[in-house]
Image 1 (tube, rainbow, N blue to C red):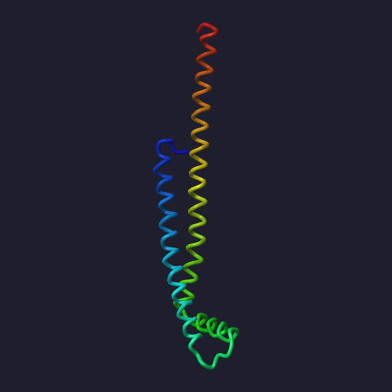
Image 2 (image 1 turned 30 degrees about the horizontal axis):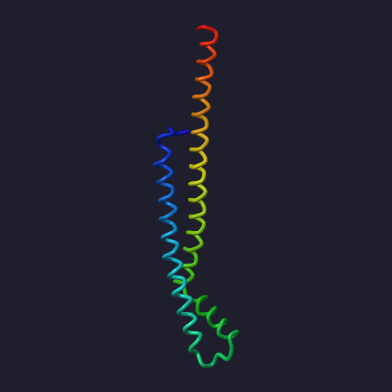
Length: 123
């Protein structure tokens, strides 16, 4: 286990990593929304499509063949997983820090108790 004084900076770095991943995720989500908006536009202006079901099917077809869209969705899934893992790591570090603080307090309390016991005995 690391020293208590190192935890704040390590926790800060882990929190920064979560924020970086979140920023990347938001950028990819915007890209995905642009692709979906473009597919909606294509489907909306095709005159031979007669109802919403046909437009939804056409939208799906447009997105299905768009390699950039598929790549963006794959990246989005990867970043969601990466963010979840980064958050779990951050919580792990926070919990480790809490345990280390409790152990330090226990150690101090035991030292005080040992000192008081020796004083009572006259050592």
